[in-house]
Amino acid sequence: MARRAIDLLRSADPHLIAIAMTLFFLVLHLTIIGTPWPEDLEACKVTKEKCAFVFDEAHYVPAVREMIAGRPANNEHPPLSKWLMMLGISLLGDNPYGWRISSVVTGTLSVYVLYRLATLLLGSGWAGLAAAFLYAADVTSFNLSSIAVLDPPANLFLLLSAYLLLREKRLLAGIAMGLALLTKASAVFGVGALLLFELLRSARGSDWAERLYNGVVRSYVLLIVGAAVMLSGLAVYDAAYNAFPNPFAHLDFILSYHSSLTFNCLGGMTPFACIHVNQDGSSVTVDLPLSWTLPGVTFQPMGFYVVTVSVDGSSYRPIAYYGMAAPLWWTSWVVMVYFLIRGIAVAWRQLSGLGEAVSTEHRLDLLLACWFVMNYLVYFPLAYLLHRWVYPFYFFQVVPLLAIGAVRLLLHGWFERKVLYLLLAVTAFWFFAYYPVKSDLHIQLLRSLGLPA
Image 1 (cartoon, rainbow, N blue to C red):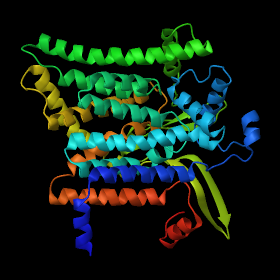
Image 2 (image 1 turned 45 degrees about the horizontal axis):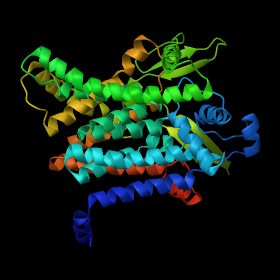
Image 3 (image 1 turned 60 degrees about the vertical axis):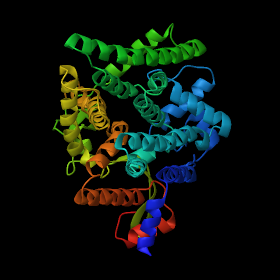
């Protein structure tokens, strides 16, 4: 029986399984899209109270309402993600269905795009499936893709731009970069990673000058297309809402705003956390980048929205949206060090003229190295030196490519594949244990296993 099941699985089309998996996660999102529901929806629309907003929905849903009324809002971030929320509200109403549907759709689509990207990079549909599952079942990734925030559309367009770039569809890749830049300010790091990747892999020629010129020209074309799309979107927003005289003034505001978001460490600082002291004497813990990825010192889960119920002296959490580290996150330094070393070697060969065109395997090394530097390591100087506010959920942008890197490391060799199967199993268990909306049966099952519910 087991042997027959394995043979049947091996004969299946991984692409069809990827579609089925994407639809499965879409269904999971849709079954909880209305939870939590506002205690008083009409009061929520008027006073913004009793809304049951999850995490940053408290910022973005009111901002979208202002935009629907014709007033500019939340100008520190570009408008595309909020336009998508507006579309959801126009289709499904000013309620959790309308607020969250754009995140659900874009978050789910990114699972499929990651499958295509991973398959292209790893040369195997089954490896692509493994990477897509690690991303889809990541607790933070799933939770952010379930609520009305800016991040899911940003990840979708970044992954799409990476895929199109590797398929040599440069114009479309540049357009996707521009759309990513229009979703959230932090998408600039993902676009920067792709531009750096393109510069390094295109650096070919007979001498340093020619190699650098070729690399800069190829990446510059992408930059021009992406910038044109982003500036056009900002210009439309600024004209429609009379927000700024031109998109460059808007960009200046975005940069100034985000540069001003700094913390102090008056309450003390370690390599893993800083205690920020407010003017009223209260304090806030800033989880620094090292705490995002190191087991044993991992940051405490961020309670995006948690409901605790006590019955007969025991407590359980039927609704618990967390931003939290997962087993995949704890592979980060092994994966990063491996690909940083290999990626730097590829970059050196390109710039020094020792290598030919970047091979399929080496472009994976180079892409992951650029991605880790620009989307994770960039936060080290920002946090530790400039004291710019950082949050663990920023790692959401790293998770898709981290999943590809982890699968690549564990793809070959009997022992490595066993570790990969274990990582997939633990990720599935982690997802089950921390699923954000639990039924009574789910809670009873967790309790029967001696786990917190």
